[in-house]
Amino acid sequence: MDLLIPEIGLIFWHTVSFLILLFLLGKFAWKPVLKAIKEREGNIQNALDSAEKAKLEMARLTNENEQLLKEARVERDNILKEAKELKDKIVADAKTEAQESGKKILEQAKREIEEQKNKALAEVKNQVSSLSLDIARKVLTKEFEDQTKQDAFVSDLLKDVKLN
Image (tube, rainbow, N blue to C red):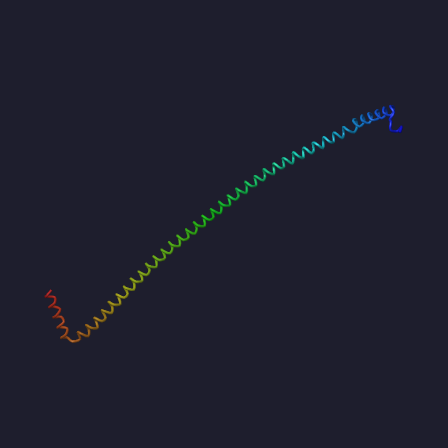
């Protein structure tokens, strides 16, 4: 039981050794440990600040990307609209040009047909007059073979001339 009851000298030496240990720890161990803890705290805070900056930068970049995507979509829509308008204009121009060309070809064909018709009519008239003259010459030649018939014909013509 004597072991359980401490004596005053033992308490004194234990207290002195504890105070020496406390002094040595404070002088050599706690300062570097506290310094390392503060450095670690600073590094953690810097990492948190960097993470927050990175988070804000990512949010900004995401917003910029979304804005760029919106602008790209609008530009794409505008390009498609312009392309459609250009296509419609080209098609309309081609239709108009085809119609005008068709009209010109039709008018030219009508003129050529009219010219051919006029040439054919003139040729028919020439042939008819030529045939008429040939027939008249043959008839007159046949008719006037006899001299008495010729005299009678001239007399009839003179009577008609006097009557008029």
